[in-house]
Length: 445
Image (spheres, rainbow, N blue to C red):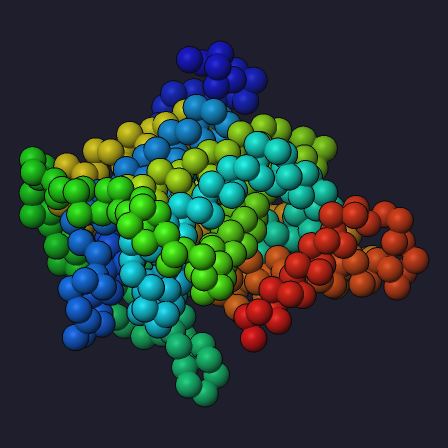
């Protein structure tokens, strides 16, 4: 086991990998609650039952899709990256596809299935890996730093430290709010632990913050430990296959084609950004390229296919994996641990109730601090590099989208390089991405 996961080569051990895998799980466990709430459209009143997915089935599908994706990533690609149904993509699935376009959720799952199968073909043929390796190092560093700012912003938002404001878009939140104060306490504790270079400092910060939250009454104590009767998966299992046999004509529409392409685009570049950022943080990038990239991408596409069959929206790599890396994870064994915890979560769901956004927010903020170190690897003295790098970094948090940040930066890169007379240094793939991203923004408008 140690030899397969290269423990000695990467200077790690079982304890460090376990803590890293557990930290990643705690940082992304919110998806077990948020995804079922989103896909079932619980906040939309007066919706016919036929348009709603079953909450219990989606919960189990979410846990199993995350477990399968993380396991394949850990064993096959050997990266400390966990997967789960993606935020943003689940909202698009529920509010745009089902609610606005009134596409049945079964057909929407078929769209997710098709996008996963297309991804699988692109991965097997090596197209996805060639695209990622064609991205210049400066932009890869920019993507990592941009994601760092993005998840820091998400952490501040989850903590209530930053809130919405009609006049200024964002503003400082109510620092007298109990949950906000709990998050601030968590930040201080985690900073102290990390400054003292305590291994697993982020994980211990989560645990201490959760305990303090329960002591002061801000977090309810677990209602139980084990739920021996998890919900049935039957209402959603295999539903993605039903339209293929019952109403194939509904699948050959421009409307569904646009849905599939949207799933493809957002997942492709969210995944690419996450892989680059997390592996760079873990020190696994070699000469600006990602070893075993094809295996990692195959794990991502496999998870999407299985997730669609189980009954959930697109499954993708999670940037929260960076929390596990910061806690010490360097190998795929951490992802195996995360996968096992997702399976157990089906039965131990009551315990997850204590992991609130106020508890995990400090982890996201501190991880953001670690990830922006990539800024030092960018040559800011070269304006043709500084412009696309800066735009990539700044637009991720401002647009609340990793994919949009990548798109804007990748559009400006060939422009500035051509103006400087350095067109020959641009990989042909980057010209293709320029065209694709321009069309992407035209489509969004």
